[in-house]
Image: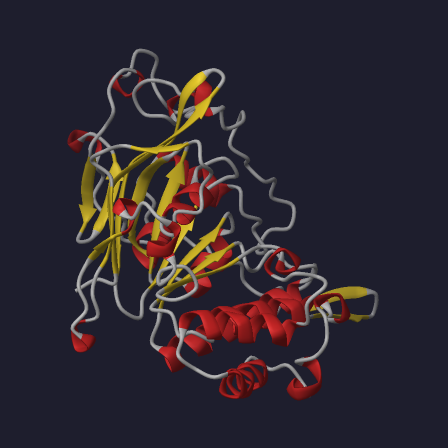
Length: 365
């Protein structure tokens, strides 16, 4: 049984202009121990979707009556299924937020109060969500700081977040999220770090923790390269809708939807440094200007004028086992025999010999 099921999630916001649809008919499941990637450009609705799993969107949020976010009960613990969107009071959400589900954000400074030590905040969370006493909570907090690779954790426990380096803040944020041993961790752009070294460390750390804690992760990012390295399955989101989903290898090697293809074509090709990037033309529109039919059709340069995609919303059609795309069935193309290269390769090391550049792969340039 899955840890979490999202069914027909539709989210609207009350504004001066009326109701604005931010997310529309989004569905996905997250399995035990699985990393599900949610990818798309800024404004696609990824974070709004993630926050709905903990009811963290604003008070002007309106959920469609058909929307369901089901946290499935832990069978070993005899737990019952919980429809999170049906919980109306903050006290009802207390076991969910920071307990069964934890969330880490793009900016670690937003996760910590600057005037309270990091350790004190970790202890407070444990006192709320567990029956530990203060001493046991402190011991576990120091243990978690050590577990995520923070040196001298007992000393760091009493420090403030502004005394931590960027990489340490990322690690401390992850440590605090994991102290309650959540069943699901929502990671919202956690690898948008100051440098690629920290990004790599965060990715490696999260992979390691998945195995150790057996938790599931909803990994939100705009970076398909990161998804290729971390996720088991991926859902590609655009303007509040899922346009393609399936196993990472299938979706990234054989993208079926024009939007997924466009995201991949915008990745740099390290085999050809002179090859120009091919960005998707135009910008993602405001939810106020949601187009009819396929929401991506105004930016799809390969679409024929008068196409039904301009008028009708395509269904999620199966491209290959477990791989679906928002296409009309007659437009589904069989899986390609040759995989598409999506992960950038390492640049070959070169050395200069007699004023000529020679690659270790052989040949002169």
